[in-house]
Amino acid sequence: MELRHLRYFLAVAEELHFGRAAARLDIAQPPLSRQIAALEAELGATLFDRGRGAIRLTQAGELLHEHAREILARLDSASREVRLVGAGRAGRLRLAFVGSASHGVLPQLIQGYRAACPEVDLALSTMNNAELHRALVQRDIDVAVARPDLEDDEFRRETLVREDLILALTSDSPLASREGLSLADLADQTFILYPRRPRPSYADVVLGLCEREGFQPKRLELTQDFQSAISLVSVGAGLSVVPQSVAQTQRPGVVYRPYLGFNPGTGLSVLSRLDNRSPHVVHFLDLTRRFARSLAAQPGGRGSS
Image 1 (cartoon, rainbow, N blue to C red):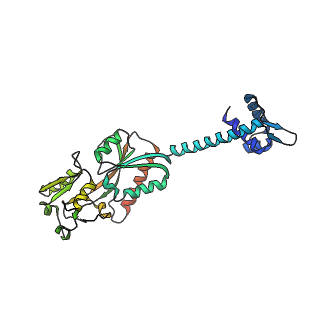
Image 2: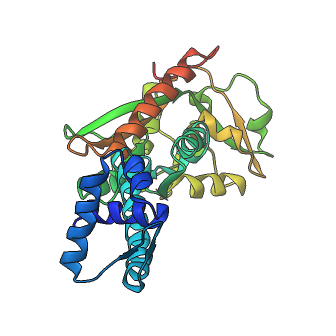
Image 3: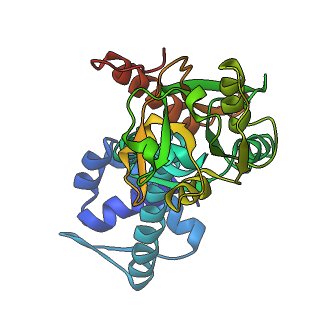
């Protein structure tokens, strides 16, 4: 039994008239009658009682009508779902990001993707850069949002945003009320940096800035992630150097201040494997590119420069 036979049968069963069914199917009536006769012969059952004035379904026809509607409805549903997944409008996208990316523009990008692709199941998780690299290589995730980048020739990347670095200080520290702080002014302070491992990491970027200013922190506390560093700052354990976007989310016991001197900033990169051409990934990277351009066009925006 072919699907076209079911479609022909269903049209006749719903119209109960060969002429109207033929017009609905945009075919001539004689071929339709022959197809229904061939279907009855194949099934070994009469599907229609053909009277002089009207036709009606037999008991066998009623049973086939019930199954045919279900089969064709499920087939149409499957076709729609497959087309959506094939176009990247349904299915699943696995995205992981560094913890500090949860502040700033990444939530806006994710909201934009959800609005554009509401049927896609977006699985989110946080990882450090080393974990992001490993997960992409092993295909455990589809997209990584790293700070600042993952060095691998097998990855494609889009720069989402660049932003300044700022100081995270304990709110009751005398430093919090001082104007014009430079990094060199903090040489005798405890620097709380992250991650503890693997190295080199974002912590080494900050240490490199200190070295450029002619000092190494008197005391250094390494934590495993951004959230732990801010928690230690909040209880007066020291200070940290963080992306500017972190200041958008206030934390009791912590204040944020700019510093004077060289500020290379930091960036967020959106990455995927070069060999992953899934429409979900391609669409997310296209959306990232457009979003980054809109950020760069805003007054005072560093964007992807």
